Amino acid sequence: MALTSRLMAKQSNTLILDGKSLTLAQVDRFLYGEFGRIDVSGAARAKVRTARKFVEKLLKQDQAVYGVNTGFGKLANVRIPDKHLGELQTNLIRSHCCGVGEPLPEATVRLAILLRINSLIQGNSGVREEVVDAFLGMLNSDVVPFVPSKGSVGASGDLAPLAHIALTLMGEGKAYSKGRLITARAALKKAGLKPIELQAKEGLALINGTQIIQAIGLVTVCGMRRWIKLCDATAALSLEALRGSDSPFDARVAEIRPHPGHALVSRNMLKMLKGSQIRESHREDDPRVQDAYSLRCVPQVHGAARDGFDFVQTIFERELNAVTDNPLLFPADGDVISAGNFHGQPLSQALDFLAILMSELGAISERRTEQMVNPDLSNLPPFLVKGSGLNSGLMIAQVVAAALASENKIFSHPASVDSIPTSANKEDHVSMGVTAALKARTVYENLQHLISIELLAGRLALDYHKPLKGGTNVEAIADVLRKHVKALKRDRVLHEDFAVIRGLVNEGALDEVLTTLD
Image 1 (cartoon, helix red, strand yellow):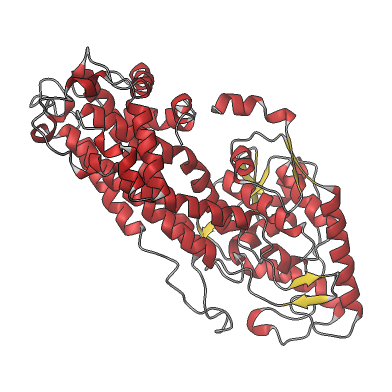
Image 2 (cartoon, helix red, strand yellow; image 1 turned 30 degrees about the vertical axis):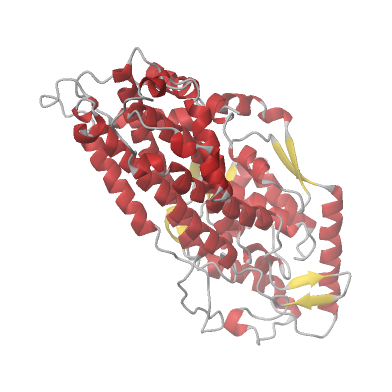
């Protein structure tokens, strides 16, 4: 769905959270602002109330319960008097607001709040219903907490960044109001909301979780649902520009090496190339025996990325409806279990894999760009510009692509294999999940630039084959690009062209073709 039509549907849609049925498609719609309101189901509210009654029952019993009437981490053995339990939770939030670095985007923070609500309402955390409503108040207004992006090791929850969110609930720290950064208390007041005073267990319940890893990662995952299809479409555009062969996409080739992604990408390539006059023009008497790997091996490389991306989506879909608090309450059984659901390893590993597969998609894209701009390889004008020599054309565009592809390799070093003990060695193995998420986000942004550069090269190269046309779907994409990016007759500032192409993709201008692909 294009961005404009998404936004038109916003006011009439309400997303009802129940803790068990949130989907990636709904997250994608939330990120595009389609939901005018967020609420919680009645059944989920009942679970919240039941869990809170269980906490209150525990408080009446003379026993130590971690995070309810004890200190935290290394201080778990310190028993806290009942009269200080509210202060304990408030101190927890204040002390954990240690984040540093650039703030997370407002959309990412809002998503983290949505995910936190969906976890809390499953009845295993023990917060009051008022806390859930306070979160909903922020989501249904323009109040967005200020959250520094760095400071989480991705275990024992995303403690520092989630604490910054909780701090806004308390009316402390800073928050955005209509995009302007002001005090949290002032932002809440402008929205007609009131700060809350935390009670027993609530501070810990607000910061034990993987929602920052999830939120940063999901922005990339949801975006890649479009861009990973575009990678196939872009490869087809380049193949036409280079007068490549369609024989590597024969279904029989995929059948004898039965990786699902391989077959899927081959189908996509054939869909893109169907009706190509360019291909028919050199089907016979072409002296070339084989294409370069960046064309011939698209099913193998893109296909591996597709299979890997399916795995990543599966992990994130599971986590959407997971409870990642500690300790965990099971009111029906009368049990409180201290465990490790806050550990971000499943997400961290998936995000490292995501960075790797996106890096490879960018690397092979850069090679196809080189194939098109290099006259020794392309049989096209040098750097796809007339009057080369006087004009440099896409010479430095390929240099930029090389820089981005190389940078992606650095950011593809896994974060999930690293660990450093924290909390006086009580928390002695961590996931580095937020680091993995931030790295993946950088690779994703670079990939968008790489594909935009390749699309520009393909759009320019196709013009040199006129009056012959490429496949129907290839031409459909090229026509959209031609409307917004003019031919390159002499040198101009190409930075703006890349930005235009990237914007077209993210606004859904190519979706009519992309929706026909698998």
